Amino acid sequence: MGLQQNTDHIQTTHIGSLPRPHDLLDLLKAKYSGRPYEPSELDTVLTRSVADCVRRQVASGIEIVTDGEFSKPGFFTYIRERFDGFESRPDQKLALFQKEVAAFPEYYAEYFKDAMMGGAILPIAPVVCIGPLKYKGEDKLTTDIANVKAAARAAGVPDHRVFLPATAPSGVGFNEYYKTEEEYFHALAAELNKEYRAIVDAGLLVQVDDPFLPDIFVEPGLDDGQKKRRAEMYVEATNAALSGIPAERVRFHTCYGINEGPRIHESSLAEVIGYVFKVNAGSFSFEAANPRHEHEYHLFEQVKLPEGKVLCPGVITHASNIVEHPELIAERLIRFANLVGRENVMAGADCGFSSQALYRTEVHSTVVWEKFKAMRKGADIATQRLWREG
Image 1: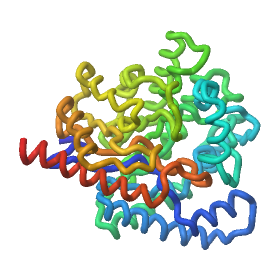
Image 2 (image 1 turned 30 degrees about the vertical axis):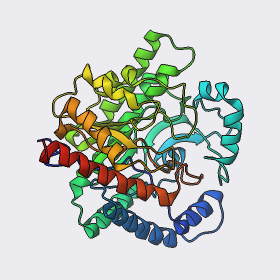
Image 3 (image 1 turned 45 degrees about the vertical axis):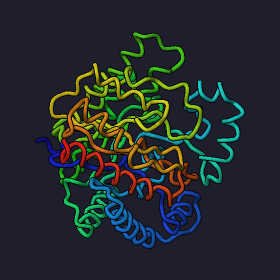
């Protein structure tokens, strides 16, 4: 059996980000808004918060755990702090679900004001590559690894059941320095390899987060050939970043968005899955609890899962405060297991629950843990039916 495959039960995990505790949030807000704070206090609170986060994951039934991404307050902040060669551009326009926003302008005007971005300390500031890329995140990564390993040991979790998320090369800012997009992505991949390798060398799993791959297929102005070439470029760069790392130590995650909304302008899993399976990873996670995509399990009636690989479909969603019933979670898992094999299905979430730490989360922090408990119960029901009764 592969490292990530099931042996006698359905394993449970999630995608990474979790709501930060208030004392950690207060210190992060002070740091990133330029107010006075004590760095040693932030370090102490971060270590304590990660320990509590891992303990709560285990208590809620999560088997493959992480640090909640507590040291990374947001995607663009993480990039700026760990790479030379980028600068922030607060006025740079993001192509985030532009068709969706155009189709529902009134909804999204209220949403951006009151929901995800309501009460934000900092505006979302995209990054632009303006010089040679160089990884400089060694110290921060060393801290992340030390914190999560200590927390996992205290909770009785072995290192190989701990993962740390890291960004994929795709979507990391805009390029104004390298001559071509291919050159840019491969330069970024070479530097990301340093982070990926350090995580794996520490005995952990690395999770590569690529929410931008599906966006290619709904991007305005691209014909089919351009979409195909860009998707291939993303995969090539990701595999270059994974050079020298065994696939069984890699988790690959993709999704469609982090928000609650109509979500009608999203690509289908059928458009994306062929590229996903080209990534040198041992498991693949994607949205499957989102009601815009739940039906797509039927795709695996025609698409064959590569040998030894694991699907990690979302069986709880990050965009609704409704706690999924364990019977429904079990049903979702059994559907996939009947198509790809019970050893090849892991229970997961659609996406992270707090991808932007300094913004209000979609799902209340108290509800997240109830969703995890429901996922554990649903996985147990599925296990009973797939192993015991089968």
